[in-house]
Image (cartoon, rainbow, N blue to C red; front, side, top):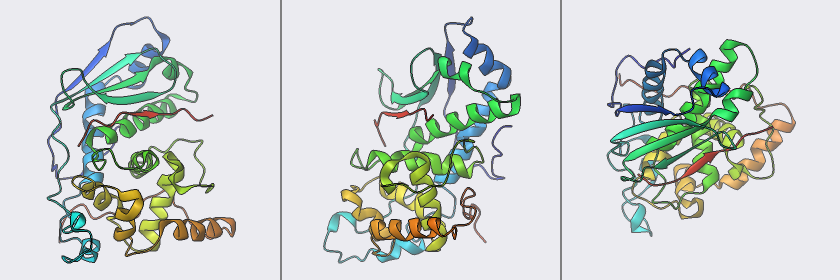
Length: 282
């Protein structure tokens, strides 16, 4: 099941390449059995990631951006939102090879505009479930890593947990959440991955800010994360840590509804060299 692209395609998919040197590895056989149409799936995954991170309705005039006044005491965040656009990516090369872990993304030796996504064939060989479940997991990993290709990170200033949480927020929105994910809270909302992703879903819904994550992403194009001050501004001055405590209380009381589905993000109107790794979870 390839991610379903939106009716209108806003951004051009960069050239996609697939490199695999060990055709005998069982993980390689599993990859091509699950994805006999790799270009279609990889291209569609790019479209899905871009549509969720950069919906056409996202603009410097988005409602939450109005909380940034021109006379803000920190001139570096006023105005907040630049013209919404992903980093200029010249190509994405997917490498299927054996290594520990699941996957990671980095710039190539040529330059950072040529991205590489490395997917572990060892991990692919261990994925359990029926063919549909295997395909869903592989596409989920691909979607997660593609977020790291197209997202901004505040010139490296953004907390790694937030970076990973945004990637899994997109994965949830694309309908490829992993079966072992549970909305359980935890000790730190910046723990990353599904923990942070579910919290971002809750924030968007509870504060009625459907474009919260896309706005945070585009703000990080030209502004520093400033230890969370940037997100706090987007939340209308509310402290994420205070909201995290409220979220956990609601979880404990069973008051948090089906957060596995993202709130509706309007998609049709009426940078960087950050190296990340997708960590395998038991």
